[in-house]
Every structure is written in C-alpha cells, then in structure tokens.
Length: 112
Length: 115
Image 1 (cartoon, rainbow over the protein chains, first blue to last red):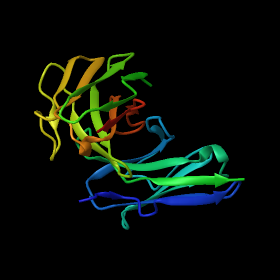
Image 2 (image 1 turned 180 degrees about the horizontal axis):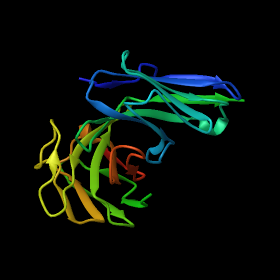
Image 3 (image 1 turned 45 degrees about the vertical axis):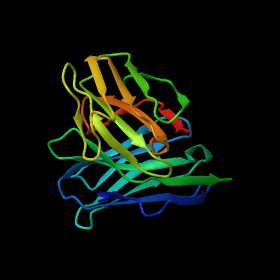
Image 4 (image 1 turned 135 degrees about the horizontal axis):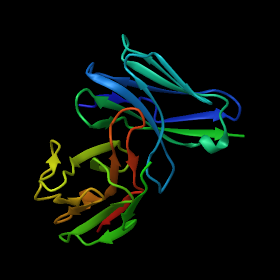
C-alpha cells in the first residue's frame, strides 16, 4: 500500500520556466511533508518542508503548497535551472512517530 | 546538519554471502535509520537503529536477514545476510533529531549488486 504517491515518473521543463512536481497521500495522520532532491550516486538532500497546519511554505525559488482536503501537495520551482535536474522525492512524517515515508520520485530534467 | 560517512560506496557480492555496511556520523544523533532503494523504486524504511538495544524492524524486514547494530550515538552497521540477486539495491543510512522541519540527513548510499 503506497501511502505517498508521485504519479509522474518524469518531467521535462525549459530553463527559466516553472517546474511543478506533484504528490498525493492517503493517510490523514501525516503531520509534516518534506521534499528531497537526489542526484545520481548521492543520498537525498532536504529541500523544503511544510507542516500540515499550513498551506504554503516558500524558500527562495522553491514553494510547497499543501491542499489537505485533496490530500495533495506540490513543489514549485521558479525559475527552473539546469542544476535543478535531479530526482525529487516527496516524503511524509506520520504523527507521533519518527518515520518518514517516501514517494516513488519524479525525475526532473531542465533543458536550456 | 550532521555529516555521514557510509562505507562501502558500492560492492559486488556472490549470492549466499553477507555484507556489512557502516554508517559513521560526525556528531551524536538521536535517530538513525536504514533504508533500501530498489531499482526504480521508492526509499523503503528497513529499520530504526536503537542505541544499545535491538533495532525496530518494519513490516517485511527481519533481524535474521538484516541484523543491525548501534553501539553508540554516532555509529551503526547494517548487515545484508545470505544475499540473493533480489537484495541488489542501494542501502542508505539516515540520521537526525526529528522527522519534521529539516527532516533527516542521508548518507551517500551503498550500491550493492549480488551475482
């Protein structure tokens, strides 16, 4: 049972445009959501997070939106840069546990 | 954030053998986890490494197959025992204080190929 889903395995965006990565979840007991970025041969690195009591969090070019009623969150990257090309994982923290549950990832390619 | 040294970075092993992966952190951390990423798949939590006691395993993972040690707050090992080709994956150590805010820090992973 995949509790965190990223339905788009890949996304291709032109440099300077907006990248939108989507994530859906099924468990209403998730209280925190995080995005990680992963380059080949490296471990995932933390990008941005959002509490379930918020609907938006922004950090520079990265903004995460949370729609609790739809159990959906998205990561917006604007403007996109070639260095953003990586696999992006959505992760969720289960309330009152220390565990992170990850989605399957979306490979983003930003081309010039 | 903590700096993790994970070794080996990759290995090719014969089926039926065992491999021990080490995770060394440059500072004391509360939480340490081991994840597996099979080809094209998500990161799946194997277990939480508990200092001085038995690890807590997730459904589908057992101690006999994946014994874990955590003798102190900066070091842990994961052993993949009696390996088969299905164990070919990337194994990742992850550490931190809380799953919220900044999440956990990951090691660079161990790419294991079983032949």
